Length: 488
Image (cartoon, rainbow, N blue to C red; front, side, top):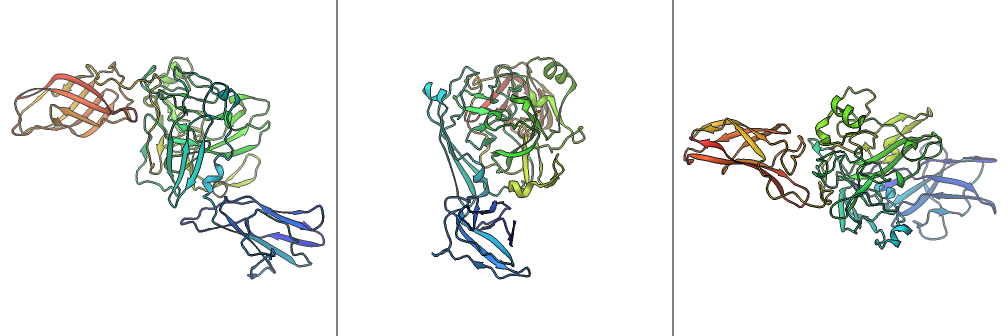
């Protein structure tokens, strides 16, 4: 800042020390005039355990840095330095050194968790959130109670949970992208509430889109079968859309692989509710023509949402990859300013909130510490132990001992419980005690694999059984058909 008759120059916003893999992080360092005379230096807190050292130098070419004497031992443990700064005719450089800083993720989490009066009046427990960290992980403990008013939209109540999440502190790309789990937690908000994927469970509308089906509350969440509150769309009641057209970036949560979930939007002047958010990022997932006409435009209930979208890299306006994220870089804002996303957000990659499917993320770019977990189907019940006549045909329907066959198993499209969406692969497919290998699911009702019939196999007909992974903690879902394959 320039202040006659001398010049004070800000040399550095902050230096992080002690991190195994340091990530860019800004701390706003401000120099202001004190009413009683002199100047004051102050900056953003870097965590409860942080120690700060303010140093100065004069001159421009490789200046030697000297600590500002505070009349006591350094480092200091405050975010304000109000002793007279060095002034004079020369240019003076100041920098702030930070030791023991909290991980940059921590600053995005809510620091004040207060109960909503309406929730208290209804007898719900107060919300609880605890965030800590170790060398490798960010640790989040929450009881899952919202800080906003809970409005029931499902048959399920609201109950405190025992959530414990550990997400990677230094996320890295995995060798292969991983599909998010069909049910359960895929990410957490910075207020300690779970985020689920873009589909519901098998009831009442099999694996349909709960946002499109209108079964979410005003904050775009609801409770599942374990009375656990979770989101399926952006929790817009938890951050404010400004009454203007300014462009905003907020980290509103973290996926279980450690990468952030970013809300990038413009405020829409004069609008309220969902219309006040002008989302800046565009998903590459495009609905098929029939689904768009019947469900999105026509109001028919959504079912099997995943089966009705396809990722298209050439989709018009697309900004995001098949995970629903992208690399963070320097971009030009709508105002014309250049903005360094990676430096501000502290990551080189992030998932983005979108107004369309899949809303948060579709695949993990990194490796989740704990995939899925928590939450049960909307109706509260797990899948039946047996799927009834879930398998209708096997092609070919017979084989000889010692033979190796490519087998196609056809499932009943109207089976109960409903079949999982196409992208969910079976846990196993068995013909009697013989397991198929090299499984592939070519459609919602078709599975293909290789059957090797042992040379000593007994002749006769066999039951065919298909197992799919069920809801978290509830075991596999079984579909079967009797006497569908014969060993000759």
